[in-house]
Length: 268
Image 1 (cartoon, one colour):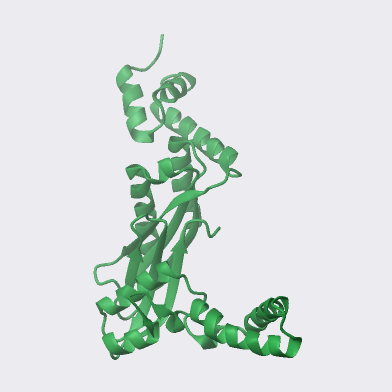
Image 2 (cartoon, helix red, strand yellow):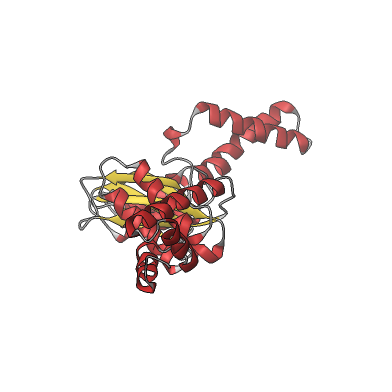
């Protein structure tokens, strides 16, 4: 005869989120010892997580969490295997919980994050992993944006008065993800590589090598830099202006000093 009741099974399910039959099996194995049954389920959950670690995570959720005055902001990307799970309210709430944990911890506890995701794997039965996490502090309010599909987001740190204009720059980053903030941040190695690519493109178009290199330099300045450098990009609401021109007009005295782009699919 079982040394536990149906109420014990129900309580174990409520506390662990494990399927009913697994709760019953754990209580059987523990001979009715409730705490031992919880431990059994926890270990099985870790084993289930380990078995799923190699499975591809093609979906996921971006979340940000800020303190009351937005001077401390965390951003996380948590990936899963399917859109079905990524759209689930419980999964979205889990990602938000992880973002808040990162926000409230000066040093991110990687083991704690793993414990949380392992528990989610045991419940959801998909590979789940935190692929990006960042915690940013600033003397002035930090602007954030998460796209409506929750697969992309950004965090923007600025100096000067906080404004709606900076939030629009956060939207710009999600719409056209840049590589760097300003031209000076581009390495010469990267610029040289782009010039070589564009030189070969011009040669393939029939230009001689000297002319091809001049064309390549022009294309890198006109195309690549305007794509890769945030402050040089055409502003999404008015492409006749660069982002830096837009800020100069709409947010006088404010300068963007750094940004973080968050996205599902960028890898861990």
